[in-house]
Length: 552
Ligand code: BDP
Image 1 (tube, protein in one colour):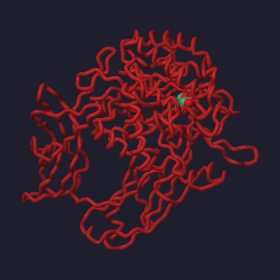
Image 2 (cartoon, rainbow, N blue to C red; image 1 turned 90 degrees about the vertical axis):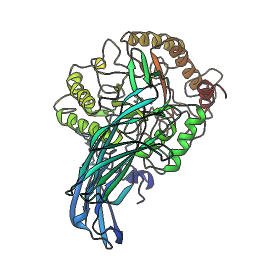
Image 3 (spheres, protein in one colour; image 1 turned 135 degrees about the horizontal axis):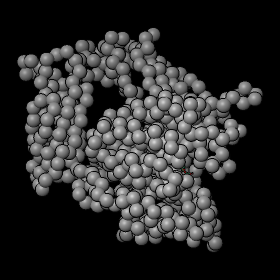
Image 4 (cartoon, protein in one colour; image 1 turned 135 degrees about the vertical axis):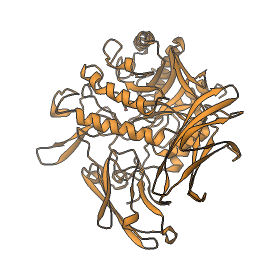
C-alpha cells in the first residue's frame, strides 16, 4: 500500500471502499549506519483514526485521533546499520468517543455500517508520511515563539525552549532574518529578543525569521541546533474589526478539504501547491482547514506566502440534530447524553485541541483556532461541554482568537455558546438548503440574521455558503445545480456582506468538489466546489476572480 494515501481510495471495489476496522501496514527499513549514538525516532504525521505501532515485536506507541502527528523514541529497539521491522495497525472506526464521532451499526445480515454525522467520506489509513529520523540524545524537544509587541520599527519576541536528555547544557538563541543575517541574540531557555527595523509577516507577504536554537554542552561544544521559522505579527479583535498588525483584515477564500481522486485524503505535495496557486489565481487570501488539521506542509507554505489560515480541529459532526436524516433507522437522539457525546468525547476533543496547538502554535499564518464545526449549540448541555474547551484553548494559546463554525439552525436567539468566543464563524445555506432557488427570500433572511449577529459587537466571518453545481449544466432560469445559479447565489451573499460592516470575511463552501458518503443529496460527492474535483474552474471561479482581484 502506498504511503501517504487513503487505502480505501486506492483499492477498487465496494468492500475496500467501505471497509471498517483494522488495517495492517508493515515494512522493513534500513537504519542508517551513521546514526550510532543518536536518538532514533519514528514519527507518523497522521494515522486515521488511531494506531498502534511496533518495532520488531515491541509495541512502541499508540495514538488516538486521525489528523495530528505522534512519535516514538525507538533508540533501544534498533541498531544503526541494521534492518528494523515497522508494523502499524490503523483503525478506521468512528465511535461516540472519537473526534469526529460516529457509531458502527450492525445490519440484520451481520454487515457493519459506519455511521457518522459529516458528509465528507471517511477516508482512512496512513494519510500522511511516516519518518525515521535521528536527533542528538540531548536535544531541543520544543520551541515556542510569540510576538510580544510591535512598536514602530522594532519588535520584541518571546521564546521558550524545552530540552530533553541528561547532558548539562545551556541555550543560545540567534534570530536570523530571511537572508540569514543575525539580527538579535539571547541566552537561556526562556526570554525575549528585540528585532530592530522589523519586517512584519503580512497577508500576501509572508516574511519569515528563524529562531536558531543552539544547545551547548558543559565544554561549550554544540550539542543540538534547531532552526524554528517564525513570523512577527499581531492578531487582535477590536469590536467588529479583525486586526492583523493593527490593520483591518478581510478574509477571502474557502473552506477546503484534503481530497483528490486516487489519493483520497492522502497528502500530495503537487496537489497542495496547485491548490495554493489556484487560490492565488482567484485572489483568495485565506482558507479554513475544514474539518481537521491539514498536513503541516499546508501551514509551512501558507507561512511563506502570506496566506491566512483558520486552523480547525477534527471536531465535526457533534450534532445529531442537523435534520439531515443521518441516523437512518436509529431514530432521534440527543447530541449530549450518556450514550452519545459525553465526558469521554470531550476528553478526546480536549486532547485534539492540545495536539493542534502543540503542532501549529508557531505558524504566523494561523490567526484563529476553530475548535469545532457545526456542533449542536442549542441545548444547554452544549455550554457545559464547550466552556472548559474554550478555557483550555485560551490557556494553551493566549495570543490567538478562538472560534467555532456555527450551524444554520443555531440562530442568535437559539445558540447558547457564541458569547464564549472572539469571532463569529457562520455557515449559512439560505437559497440552498433553505428557500431553495428563491434568492429573493434568501437575501432578505440572510441580511436579517446577519444584522442580528452584528449586534453582538464581534467580527463575523461567513465560513460556509454555497450551492451544489454540476459543471456544464446551464440554465436560462438560474435553476439550482446550474453554473448560473452558483454565480447568482454567491453574488447575492456578497451584496449582503458588502452592506454589513461586521462581516469581515467570506469563505465559500467549497474550494473544490469532494468525495462524500452516499446520500440522496450527493451525486458523486459534494458539488459545491468552485473548482471541480480535478480542479477545473466552474463559471463561479471566474466571477470570484473578478470580485477578489478586481483586475481580472
Ligand atoms: C455544512 C458542513 C459541511 C458540508 C456542507 C454541505 O459544515 O461539511 O459539506 O454543509 O452540506 O453543514 O455542503
